[in-house]
Length: 620
Image 1: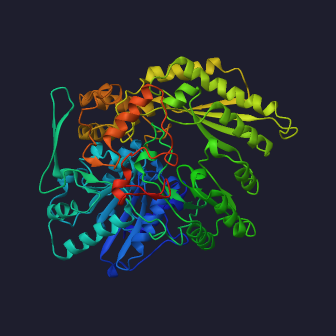
Image 2 (image 1 turned 90 degrees about the vertical axis):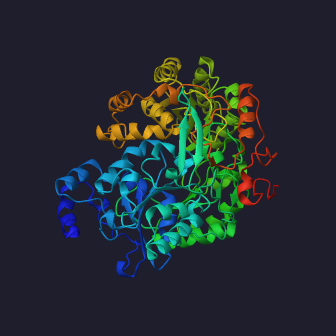
Image 3 (image 1 turned 90 degrees about the horizontal axis):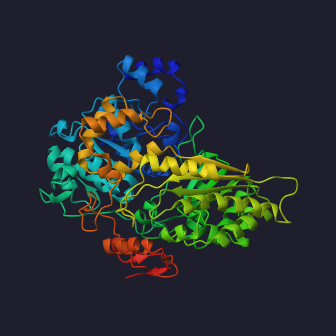
């Protein structure tokens, strides 16, 4: 039996608890009493996947149906994969230890473009055909689906995924599984099921769309067939207070990246930073009320035993009642010695009141996203913070007892000059000087400023989706410029791998022709591409060359506004005219006020019945 074979190999690998299942709050059902079995796959290691809130939500949601069973699957690390292949053990789910081929649906969440080869590897390990057309016309082979933020441009994976879930899954997932359950009972063909599934709002079936190309490689036309919709609308959950949220999380046996209770307090972002895909993709703004957050968080703390609660959002301090929320949470968390973590703080609303509340929780370093070193550059990207606000915020933090500050920056942004790059050093140095010039600073302590410097990647559904990406050589030059102009030992730089960034940029805006490149790279041994120690850049470059695929076409050229982009048939709700206007304002270094100051009519509320919480009223 497969279970016996798995038991025999577990002592041979590092961290066998990654593969055992049986954790507190994991769900085991009698498969004889289930109609639909769902394998939720995270294309990275257990430690990363078990930190993902979306998996926790959908795992509990599907299992809330008595006749549906959702199990978890993670990418086995290199040592486990080697032993599995040597012993002819297919990829299996943790709860039942059954092979993925025994499931009705295999679903991937795609959080990052550089997990694409891991998806192929997991399918291969599961002995499931890689390409959709190779799976025949029966529902006996699992339906392969995918969701997550990367499916705002699903095209690079179009050859491998049967159906994409575009947008938020709490309602869409059950509609999809209910249809599949009905079709299996009626012995419906695979093709007919996918045709019917394409009529569910948010479901994109790539095989139902033909793509034609111009002689210059750009897209000429995308044509739906078999009655598929011309555009696929992103699915939006209207009411976060009344939508499903788990009352328990699976508690891992091993330490994971985010080993704590995580609670989502609102979706979307009011800010409109022009580089930020998540800020636009998760619009419109929807907040949970304080009582809902408190009750759900308290329940999760009780059922998991965690001693830390992290409030999750794109900008936690933009939650309308953040001070009231912290007061309510601390009322029950402090007596139970549960720490409240508040990530994603904005520099321009780090108030004295918020500082006082944060002083009541466990002290750690503060992280702020300045993004750019000069005011001109911050205006280009619509960051809407000033140098004065940055330094004032750091001063408040130092007075409050903090001595470590993390600042996030980007290089390679549109219109960037060397002066803008050097400005990152100059701003970081001013933060250091702010500490030492402050008479109320913590006594007898020094300051540390950690500057995380990533490289800009133009992303779909943002005002910068038409912009060229800096070349690898140019990004390396800018990194060296920063190091050469830094004069303080109090400042530490952390750079992202520019080769990874380059590949991310190619796939972020790629089309379905890149499927051949992904498969070729996978056949060359590329997996775990987001890990520096496993990333094989040379093999990827060989794959592009063998497929005659022009890397610069995808990464380093500017698109015209009238070019058909690979994701144009996916409706994010954000109007193209709005994105173009924001792009033009960026060129002129003009800012747009955030959504609570003035509605910029981005259009995202069109997918939510005209409703948006940004102004605490309905926007029509």
